[in-house]
Image 1 (cartoon, rainbow, N blue to C red):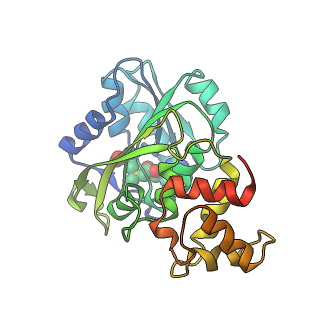
Image 2: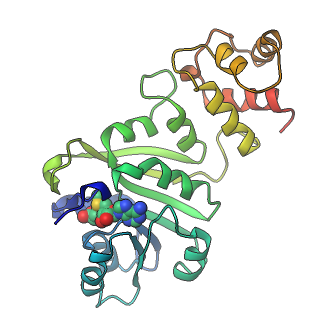
Length: 268
Ligand code: SAM
């Protein structure tokens, strides 16, 4: 039986399975963190290619099945737990031997963004993430400024990674079938933030404030948040960044947000 609330849609298409592993480009000895292995089809496919996989699964009923599936592989381990509650640095030390690692997962869709953000913000030496997610979320993560899909999630992901949509996956590839279309996306960790040097906390505070009310101008959104500045002072700072106060956050690049961050929070 499947537990809908845990986002259990198991992949049953062998071809898609191999395409995910191909997209991840993992090979022998690579360390991989998998979120939500289910019955272990993806875990096993990666172990077969010689990767050292640690899989975190919340559903206790699946642990014996997983242990069975992975019994023949020296370097596959299963941890029972909630990925949003595990101590990631401890897991990394213990199971990924404190080495650079990648994430490969057919994610439970109800926690897609929190999982991705927790891993990106952990500060651990992530190399890439290859993820099956909802098509619509993949579009938002890979969106460029100006389009309808561009928002807080695009900026948050692109602050750390290059996001590339790989391929679509139809509902028929899963059991049971999800109601939405899916896509595989790769997020490649960037050596340096594309926004340039900027304080991370300040940047995210500013971006959240800028996107607070979707239809409002940048000026209205920033004036409504707690910078302790008058409306006029907010307008002046926006203009000093070479931007129009009437612009909407949806049109701004990461570099624009970084300039605004420096203007509103002082140099770096
Ligand atoms: N990897 C398998 C596959 O491709 O067939 C299963 C993918 S299924 C979409 C998502 C899996 O994540 C399920 O096995 C579910 O039990 C597990 N899961 C759900 N919430 C979780 C959480 N908070 N922490 C860890 N695993 C979770």
